[in-house]
Image (cartoon, rainbow, N blue to C red; front, side, top):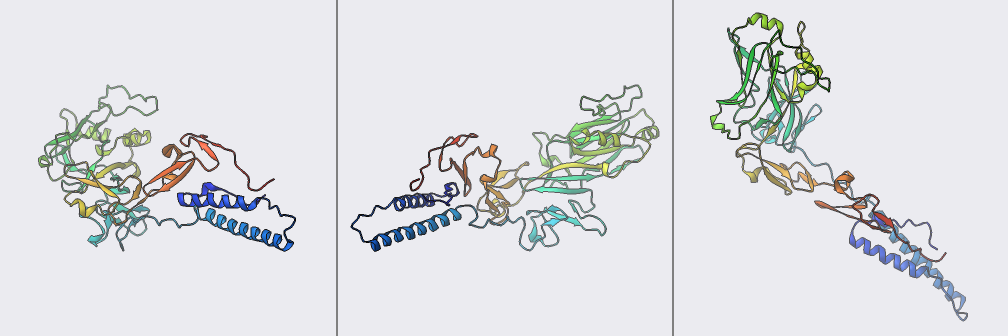
Length: 418
């Protein structure tokens, strides 16, 4: 009986090693069989034969232990984390990572044209990653697939004339030539009395709504979630989805993608309206104003609104425009995908790979065996391969490895005799 050896064949993950494992087991079984000496065999020869068997068994056990150890996942060192930026370039601002094609600083090799950002390291404050140098649009998180989360600090600045009408823009960085655009799910929000706000790009209207203050209107009642239905248009607030027409042509646009116009409605006293509720225009994620604390802060009267309450979250998409495909998607395991605007595209890692497709060797094999089981549907032994994975029931079991509990134990032979 051979004891003290854990024959955990599930540690072996390649076919060649598995074949060698079976060979070693077969040889051990042959050597471990009881040796029957004839009565005529000399004691010295019988002892030598037993000694040889013991040495052979010990050697095979060492080989088997080495094989199991090498296949146990602790042999080869894990690949280092994929790079996110160009060599010798800064790739973070505070706690926000800055992956290529984005970059920081004066070195233009650290980013593609139009993707340079600013890191505000003002003494005494937390570093801020900015899309525009004036600090209006702050980047919170960048995704290379291709989306980034930002916040617009404060209401949109408007140039107000003597009649109370105004003009402004969502961001000076979102020009027609810039690679950025608002993601779907963005909306226009207007607070104030008897005013209308419109978002346009040239002569193309993307959103518009009118906010009235009717003293005879009933107070807004909360819905089932407890959030007041305040933006009905007649309660000092309105909202409108920002929609890009399907036939939109950038040649019809002006220099800015998102111009904002404010128009006062006639027949009301402007001073009285402003005392009742300040006029503020926001472009934000369409879930932001659903938060009752946000809407309550912005619709209150009699006291100023905290700076934090005026930070409106936005999501921006980005495309590669005006760059040859072959010069931008650098990884061997990457491909181009159509972008959100005409002529634009983005780079993505091939299926089974993860990382930054804009860098040489940026897309690394993604270990699917570390994914949640509901994604791999592998409830047996998961074996990661380059760009993919395989699944099987562990040695000593059989059945369906694609369902929980699908691999059941089979009869395992013991080595030697009891």
